[in-house]
Amino acid sequence: MSAPDATALSVTEAARLIAGRELSPLELTRAYLDRIRRTDGHHGAYMTVLEAGALASAAAAEREIAAGRSRGPLHGIPIALKDLIQTKGIRTTCGSTILKDWVPDADAAVARRLQEAGAVLLGKLHLHEFAFGPTGVNPHYGTPRNPWDPARMPGGSSSGSGVAVRAGLAAAALGTDTGGSVRIPASLCGIVGLKATYGRVSRAGVLPLAWTLDHVGPMTRTVADAALLLQALAGQDPADPSTAVPPPPDYRAAMQGEVRGLRVGMPREVFFERLDPDVEAGVLAAARALEGLGVVLEEVALPGIGDAAAATFAIIAAESMAYHGPLLRTQAAAYGQDVRTRLLAGQFVLATHYINAQRVRQVVRAAVDGVLSRVDALLLPTTPIVAPRIEEQEATVGGIRQDVCAWLTRCTRPFNLTGHPALSVPCGLSRGGLPIGLQLVGRMFDEATLLRLGAAYEAVSPMRDRRPPEP
Amino acid sequence: MMSSLSPALLQDIAEALARLPIAPEDLPLIQAQLEAQAEGLGRLDALDLSRVEPATVLLPPAEASR
View 1 (cartoon, rainbow over the protein chains, first blue to last red):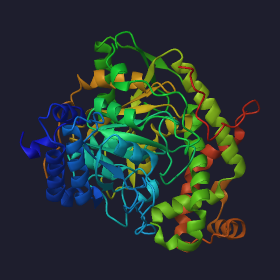
View 2 (view 1 turned 90 degrees about the vertical axis):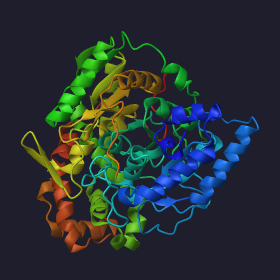
View 3 (view 1 turned 180 degrees about the vertical axis):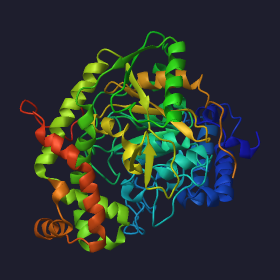
């Protein structure tokens, strides 16, 4: 296999070739580094490239595998991390100039788990400043370009992760998701993004945005790859008291099952209101494709879902302001204006708003649990719109003009509020050639059913073999 | 409620309660954000939540026994 082709392989395919000694980790890593060198000037995905470290890790992986000490399917696979995830001895900027020289003295739990699984760290990826925004536009370090159209935003906050995976600059990446920040760039860039159940993956060592909404998740080119990464990431961590005790199942085995007969609910209120017509057509076509595989679709209602947006706003505003308050007191001018004003708005959220939001959280969570006791998953769009132009502040859909951030987060935020697992899978291109995301939401800790549904859909999806143009 | 807060009042509240003065050029943006959320936050105030306790935080959601 020629080296440049190796960057087009999924993690699953590369792992199979590495296991069969048909591809070496060093060869694969060199192919990625070469592609980063040639094209990241155009894409702008990387904050920091770790060429020497990646080559050393790949060489070590190669030696271990040759000696018969394989650590599993991620051994020798080149991955990259959102630059909000702490890495020992490696600069971690969080997309902020305030932390431009911060070098953590310990790895985040997720970074350590990937390292233990033998993954090769290629580098750290761009993001919306402090992960507080869904567009990926960053006034300090520049904005990664959407691989399908460089004039379009990649989505955020895990902007570099979405771009790097879609553009072949990493085999997989990690993002974080407080209001949709894994799923939104996955949708806008045309890749798979998984926010597992709150408590499934440790947040220890990841700079917080809002403690009770934050999640870490894999961003990959295929659903099977997301399962491989989740397997390595999932599990209890004493350093994160929110992590769940029961061990995760074997996701690869669980996702092989039949989807015929699974029941999937489509919640019309909020999620299917005011959609870009191309998004609506793409998601409905995906629903029909699942129906063709024997999935039983039905409309469902989620009482209280209309209050989820306000509750999420109150929680994220209060929690983020509580974290950033000390920094804002001394370095307010160092924040970009969009993030600074978003944070400062949190001063005017009352304690009663926050508490009532936490009560609404119970109501909405119970409503979603109730529906998911009758159906196996929910199906909805990931984002109501396709990628806006980078400079766009507002967008109009169905005659309603609204802030781009409100459009982008409408369908994702409710599941940060409830903690349910949610998977975004590419389901088509708009007439303008921009990706559309299908979102599947599952029962608490039942990521396996989502992966099974997602993989079954992916096999018949019109996006299966679609790639963005080369720069 | 929030929609009637003037930039000057926002500035006074910020300084008095949070000890975080706001640059004048940021005030219109903050006011616009609060106005956009005012209706939703007002609805939270109006809900009958008398039988609902706040969500437990820092613990995983009710785990299925699986």
